[in-house]
Length: 152
Length: 79
Image 1: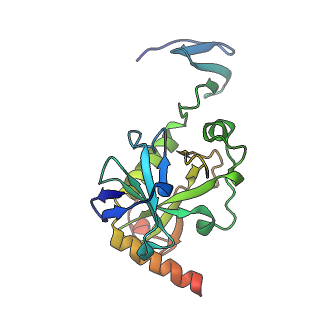
Image 2: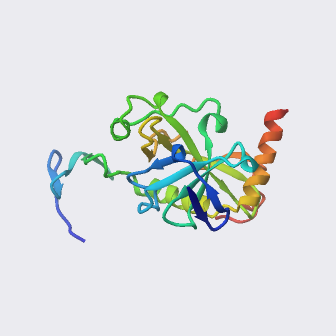
Image 3: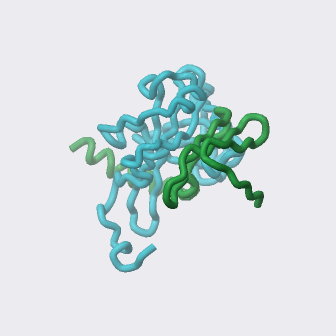
């Protein structure tokens, strides 16, 4: 089926790409049905598209491509909500953010999206381990130029 | 705002299925235990807000910018 998006236009999505986030994403709690699509132009990134709002599209990346040593420890409540014993059994994606001001692209390792491979139920979890950054740098200058001049 | 005084070991019930227990009070810090259904996500406020902001920013990503970043990433991966 086709999903209308504002920035990507109409995107073809097969049922295998459908994902349900029963609690939505933080700040987007009303969005529960998504498709995870992988248009070639954006590889290795994928787009997580909301069925209910053409303005809501998240770029995501398979976690192992974002950080080789990434091993998120899953809280017991999150594991139960997803019906999985450990994060090894789940697909893990991190959300990418592009800063138009400095061109840096970061990924959020602190709050990955975990997807059960069979049920396709997913959840954005917040890891208690503070060593995983909300803005892990992937593309761009390690020190953003504006940071040294003005405090945020 | 409802204000309730509680001592260590005492609880507060929110609705039928949320229980907050005061586990420890020391100095200016308080340790809380929270029991809630799986559908209720519990987070420290500052991290919750930070992730909300990050999600909003991500949702506004322009495809052209992502395509550029994807090219840069493929270049790195390809050597």
